[in-house]
Length: 125
Image (cartoon, rainbow, N blue to C red; front, top):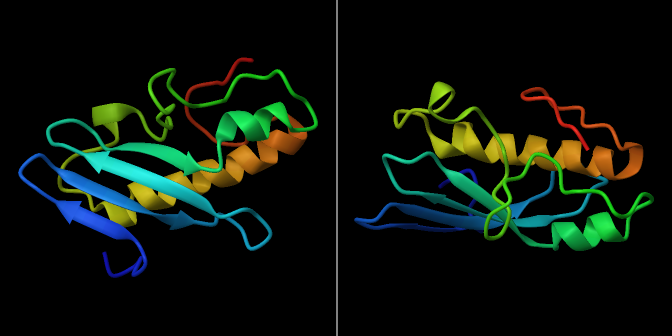
């Protein structure tokens, strides 16, 4: 993907694999992100580094649950309402990657404020 020249992108008969770094704000951390997309499923994004559970545990309010992530292997991020907001004609670079960056921005704010600023399904601690 030309928008992310340092990222690793592989396409195979199984689907697409993308791994790269995103930094949601100039003041924020850089995160290593992995996106897998195997049609007809929706893309799945996970944060490889840093460990989000570690960041939560060492935040101003430890003991909270990781917000807007699915309780599955590597905690895939909840970025959109599945097939209602995603279809295979959408470009990952124009949708999923900006959504991950926005999720990370909301996460960094949540670490400090304990308020999830993103839209979507209400988050309940």
